[in-house]
Image (cartoon, rainbow, N blue to C red; front, side, top):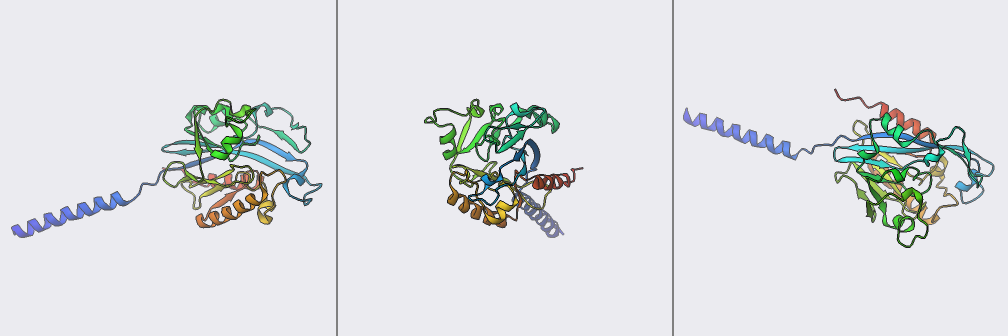
Length: 284
């Protein structure tokens, strides 16, 4: 009888240890939230600048200008920064080149308040690139660490830059990147280097809790659907051949990850992402 008792105790101990081991091996998946905000609207009055040839001559197209908030247990990241807040005006502004008619809907402070955030809540700030429509409110992100490709840093903030962009004047915390970067070191939020539009252009993958597919934000690798379909490169890109290589790498990565691609300037994709985010059931 004693032997049976000891056997049962031993089995119980082994069972508990196995359960503990299994629990230890099961990774805890962090809860990642994504918010999409409007950083402005852009009417492209001369769409031909978005091709290397005359494909779009005489055409116009409406763009949106989104930026994003990513909430993670280890901190918060803001991706891109919309148009400058000076463009929060009653009427759209026709900029001097005649290409763009631009306007911003609201300030960063008000928009963050609508989703329960403050500017001071961000650990990290990253831009797909440093053009004016992605760096608009960057100067307010002084408490966050800027995640920027080294090449992009050198042409925007480096010591050799004679006239630095006012949008970056308050950004003293900088982490230079040399390629891809896993922001929270757990595979949930990954910056991918995709140069060509600018020398240090990058895109962002976000594994949002509650969605079947990860979200892959394009930056300005593509501006609208046709440019993705036909791999058309804007006339003002830093390097056209490099852009094509990045497009190929991007599509391969999107397929590997089974990702939902969101073209950041596309009104259609803005609506698509809104529907996806609204479909997430809140936790009980």
